[in-house]
Image (cartoon, rainbow, N blue to C red):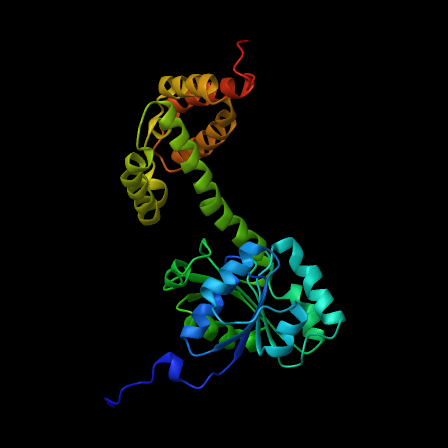
Length: 310
């Protein structure tokens, strides 16, 4: 085995010129990760002051340009724009002749597969959908978090190896998602990650209202253990009054929430019903206890959400 020292990434010959269209939280982080792998960021586009600051922080000395100029300079283009903006952007770039034959065009939308890039494909581009299953902050910590991060990968079969290689170069783990499964895949991630933030934030608000001075410190160990247990054991990790069938406790919860935080009642009831269904199916909730529990949840849903009595 050779013991010769390997060149640092910055000393390797640049392989691809990387451009970013849309300097939100994702694009600059992915470009910075590709730079660590030996590629060369060459241009970035951003409109808002915040996007320009992110680009300057994560991609210093990379010039800010228009989207058309980014494509003109780049071998690999990261289209990191909001989902609803992506189809129109792709069509516009293709119609104006900005897309070059042989150019790698990568979008990071979880919702779409590769077909949204069909206008660019007809112009000769090579379409890839690479969605990092990660939440981004717009700071350098994002680049570190890509290590071991799963990416939902969708591409024409002949480009599959190239797509997976790019993910690996960014430190990620490629997970193949078929074109037709992209919306379901994205819904699953949103359900878990986005709604988790809402649940945690509401929980902290309620703890503050109950007089807890450091709700984050109280919730941290509990939620960390719950997440670990859920990932390891799935439904077998369910605990709490719903899984136990403690209808009286759940009724007390609903009454207190209706009094102090009526805006949280609908979410509590919906999650409690879903938890009861899963606990029943897994054999954790006894059927004889489920009837009273489901009655409480039905009664809670029938009451008005404005805190008034019926």
